[in-house]
Image 1 (cartoon, rainbow, N blue to C red):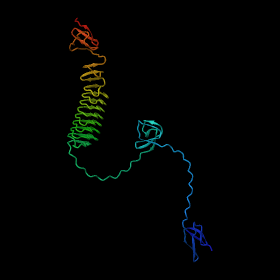
Image 2 (image 1 turned 120 degrees about the vertical axis):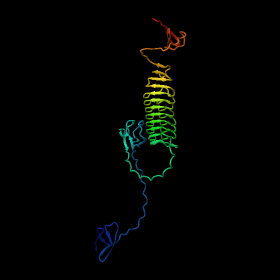
Image 3 (image 1 turned 30 degrees about the vertical axis):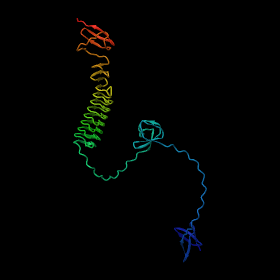
Image 4 (image 1 turned 180 degrees about the vertical axis):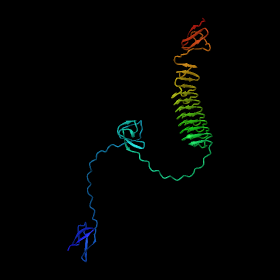
Length: 357
């Protein structure tokens, strides 16, 4: 007799001690007219079959697209070609059209965004406080707002530093004032210097009594008694007693001393000569002589051009040439009591007599 039984919610029909419909035969035994499921037995694992023959090699795939060429940080002066990749402003970009210069990649149609800058991460946990360092050597009576000194002797007296790394390297120099980032940064023993502006007097180590007013004024200075007013005024100066007023005035002066340069971009005719004057590129001086449009005057007043005046006065009589062939320079004029002499060519004189009336 067959019976209908239910195992795990499914119906099966009993027939000769097996259940039809399951993955494996199930042994059934009858007890008091009820079919009971005793076990589902698994047979031993069969022997593994031999490995099959290796298949033939497949057809090569299509060539992938060209890769990007990493060029590092974007540079406005570099020429880029398609597929060059750069970084700029925390993001990376790749070139889609050859370009040199122009706007940065973020606003330049020749570039496409490769990866944008990630968001700022969460602030890390504050570390434990370090041990207190040993007390430094007592310094002089100086004032600092931000940085003043890392010198071993603490600096001299009367110094004032206002700005990041102003007077940072000071050792023993006194009565210096540095106002602005990097003002008089490398000054060590120089005294009575004043630097006002970014990097003013930056490299002055031992020079004294210098005044630098303006960004990078007296930047490379190594000497004393100079005054520079204006951005990069006396930028390369190593000489003494020089005065420059104006943006980049006297910028190229190096070892020249006692020079005066006034005007934007005005330099002395020579970077190494002394006692030069240049006002606006029109009035020059050299060793006490003044030139108008003459860069190297050889007389107290040396004019290149026409002179207009309401009167002309000779304060003393000149010395007459000894002869018509006496030493003389073309254009030279000498006035004596009886004659006016004119040099018409080198060592060639003519004269005109003077008479009363």
